[in-house]
Image (cartoon, rainbow, N blue to C red; front, side, top):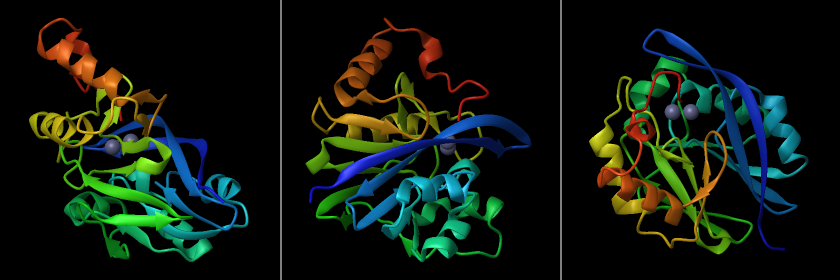
Length: 221
Ligand SMILES: [Zn+2]
Ligand SMILES: [Zn+2]
């Protein structure tokens, strides 16, 4: 049976640098009727388990360690018996939320996670967070981008541990190397495609776009 993608949106808060924002997070579940991988663990274990159903969870993959993406990762691990995977460069962010609790396995660039016969290739895309990763699923024609790339541009870089030039370089080198028709499934909000976002960023770089697109303004995740 081919792998499919299930999805839900779970609302909660994102806190960093002494500020708290209301956010709605996408949860992506990739798998078949037997097993699945959960991408990000925001806010509410029951909401995630409703999408998983009775399937075996083989991994909880965190796109980065902002609290809205990892808050219930340890509780979900407990509930479903799956390891938590995170890029080790996000340790400082992880420890802000989960002091004294470890994740299970480090993610590394180029690593492939296989679930239900489908490969998820780990692309290390730092900038929004030092350990930010995207998961490219060539068989599914999509990439799960966390907060690295949204519909409308890169993720926010106005807070601690973020850097816009690093993020833009990672997006151009790693994400814009993917086929134009690759569907982008981000950590918040609607999807887009690699081709649409490349065109928009190129227009911005040429001074044709709205500067606000790239500002990472307050309140964005
Ligand atoms: Zn984030
Ligand atoms: Zn986020």
